Length: 315
Length: 267
Ligand SMILES: Nc1ncnc2c1ncn2[C@@H]1O[C@H](COP(=O)(O)OP(=O)(O)OP(=O)(O)O)[C@@H](O)[C@H]1O
Ligand SMILES: [Mg+2]
Image (cartoon, rainbow over all chains, first blue to last red):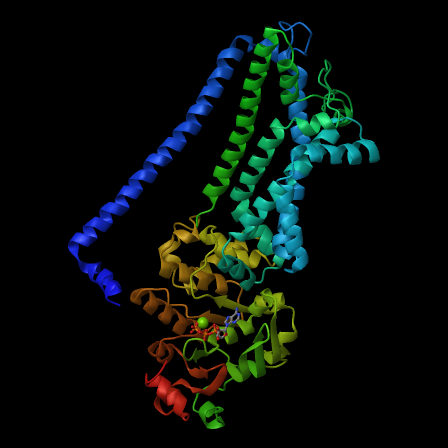
């Protein structure tokens, strides 16, 4: 048709080419500006929130705040039991979720026969990652507290958060494993590896960077969780610490702490925020700073580890 | 299908020994027939080339020898591939890991592990439980020398294998295959991703290697088949149309299809 021919005739027309380029460049400019704007909104909000937190909480941040249990006097109150509780709970979470999540990811990606059942499991795991955390709390209350009778303990809390982050760890493990080129797998098989040797010597180490990313995301989420822990009966006011894991007498190691009642930083914050006195708001802000620092420290460690892993592998 | 006559075999000075023999092999990709009634001998310490147009089944046949098809669901073999001369065993009935411990492979695209040069080669021994440093050192050096790579990398064995040039990577992969002293090494168009100079060095290497190992190689390049192989099988549409010593295939092919292909009339 003539009109189509007319369009095709412009393909080598210099004026049409210049116009086309200019038009496309305008769009590019537009998206660059849009991108900058979005970035600015996100960054400014973050800077505002963090600086507000710091300005309000900083006066309270001292050694005593760190080493004192909570108290009804805001000047005396500290976060000792809360940060110790947070660390212990996260420790249990990591010990449970990391090996289970990686093992499940390896099984699903490398061993499980590819059939409708696998697809079904895959869809469900992805969905589990989006289930509201309080649902996990209810499940844990029913299972760990009532059926297994673990009580309102650090163990229960650790397992609850482990369940919560398990889907993230499994999904990222699978994705990282899948990203390893088939040529590398075939090369390993071709020199006589068993499947497990191929996985343990190649696929797993090469994908450790990606797996660690999943662990970072999961653990960071777990540190800030409040709802499921309140559901399973975390205390909001606790003045004594669990028995330390390392003892001065034989057998030097004690696991009594896993049965101890506990609180965690976000719950302590929540408790203070909901009090009428202004002084407690300062405490809450200070605890918020500690929570941020704790999250950053966990992330920092994981990012460092990931960097080390990635550096040792040269594609 | 033309079989090599005894007269062909007798033209060789030394007596020929069979390293492998394919008998009545059919192969299916999830029900789709890709190899039809393949019969092919592979002679010891000779280079056997598989040629033919794209999609005719060269790679499929090659990968049957080290049971690579077993890694993917839905693939099925029928027939036999006998391995060894005195007490041949049907490798299609063996454990695939056992097969791959005796038949090495070099792939089309160099695929070194993202580990050090040293570990790339030592790995084949490590999977067999050999971790003795002295043994590994010796095998790494010997394999790299056989692959004509030792002089280029002897001072940087700790560096990643992936940091080498394409041709060096392919020679590293050859060294990796040699390290475990396989009976046969399979090459799937090992030079198609390389420049002409690297190609020549790999070709020279294959010519030298045939004194220590049996080689089965897929190639698209007929000049290459002439330069390096003693026997050639011409494949078309999943079948071996003609098999003979390389000179005969290229100078006096029996089948019209072969004549057309080697003279460049199609393919
Ligand atoms: N994984 C697979 N699944 C299904 N069909 C396949 C698969 N791999 C190859 N085929 C088919 O089997 C036939 C033979 O393929 P093959 O890769 O062996 O050919 P080839 O001779 O090596 O070709 P080329 O020279 O292009 O490498 C082709 O028709 C191809 O489409
Ligand atoms: Mg091929």
